Image (tube, rainbow, N blue to C red; front, side):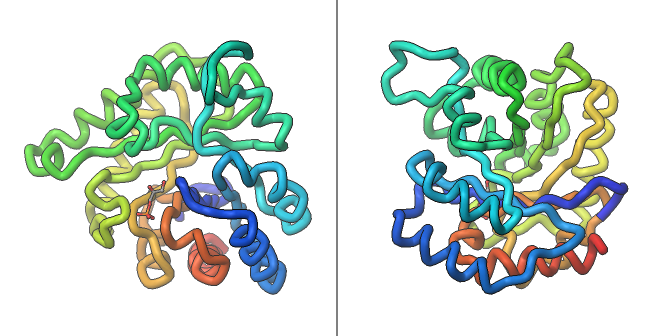
Length: 249
Ligand code: 13P
């Protein structure tokens, strides 16, 4: 874990989680001590933001959302605006997740609009970037990442931002990047962010689990993790947090 910034372990529940499951998660979370050097955050689906807000806050866990729309309010059926997320006490919002890029067809231009809207209302975006297996095999990983980060050109310097490097081929597949790949790619991402005037925290994501968390979190340039599947159970989520705390301390 590099730098003096706090390490963040964020759980992205994706389209998972019923009220009963959230209650179970919270009950289990209460049994675990809060770590000192690690910030915890959870991004449940929209329907669980309000019910989870208070119990997560009591446990020192920051709340976030998985997406936001860029308009202020009005006739945008099915959409959620930044003020609604602030109203639900969200601090973070995930933007540009590869599932939204590939399944919903979200473009870099739309993601940039969402960044602006999030910043306007005091949210901290977690901007996801990552290459497909084909792109890595073609040797164009850095080019792809630079293109995804280029939406930060001209962005205000003082607005909060976290970036998550998530190789698309490692998401939900059980495959993880090797420590060498992680170190090399994170170094490139940090360099590119500095060039863009946004020297921010960079997380790793993609099949992070209790078994590999320590090795991944120990990589130079990794300042936390964005966890999918393994964040659905408090037990495995907290094991990842503990692994991170060991390397962050
Ligand atoms: P998995 O941890 O399930 O691979 O998901 C990673 C992810 O996409 C987090 O945003």
